[in-house]
Length: 369
Image 1 (spheres, rainbow, N blue to C red):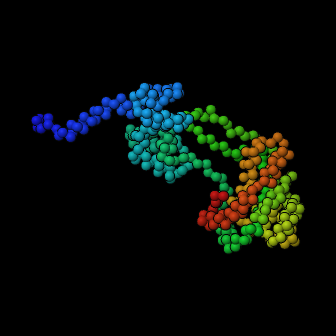
Image 2 (image 1 turned 135 degrees about the horizontal axis):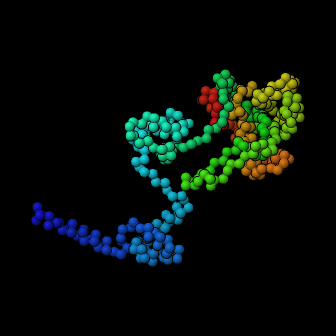
Image 3 (image 1 turned 90 degrees about the vertical axis):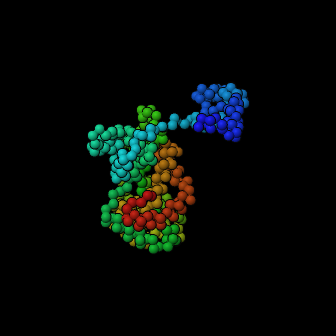
């Protein structure tokens, strides 16, 4: 066996010789650059050395030096990569935690730790809540802020279904002749404003700015407005309380001329606010031949002007900031209203059919509008 081992085939000897000659080349050493080599490359490049000179100094190929430098330039501004130990949470513990989150998405990280400790056997290790949070984040789970929607009773859900089924029978031209209306209150410094920051986990919470809010929420003004596919209607500042008599006067002064200017039969949409359903208002509609939609209760998600108000408020806050007076706030809203894009109006008006179909799909529940 020893004699056979001494005599290797000639082609293996030639291969060995070739490999030795390649490794002996001054620029063909292992291309895994050390930390010292990397620092030297960055320093020499800052001195405007050529890649050939740098490669000779660190004894690596020019391609390897250039590749490291390009990668460093692309990632220089990024936070350090979070390296998680592979054995942090695995096996049955992995499945147990994910099952708890899937069954109860609102569960807190500390409650997960508490539940694991409660059912742990003997000296079984239970990870801390911070480790569980890191594990879930690395597994694709994230915290999502839920959108606030009104609580719907079974009766109102059924009314929404009946309304959707009835309205979907109308031709597409019907929605081109609907005037959407609603009131809204605009505040100069609303407390409901949410601010989200994307920061690395190395940034301490005390170093983040605050989402400031005032006790009174600043200046507030109520507006009434309407729009349709025919165009943008009037915007009205409501001074004081909007009761039945004030609302009837508003409709007589602003809505009636708007309907007559359309030159086609129009249908008026309003929600179920008490002043909207008062006897003087209903008599006004009847005496002037104004057709109204039989609007289902608790359905702001079906009214496209609600989305228009939200867009206007966001634009005002972004463009103007906090106003110093009520007059300034009113002027800001009027400026944005006068510059509403016609395409935005059409898109909102055209979304009604989709909203009604969504109501049927969700069996009368709230929709994502």
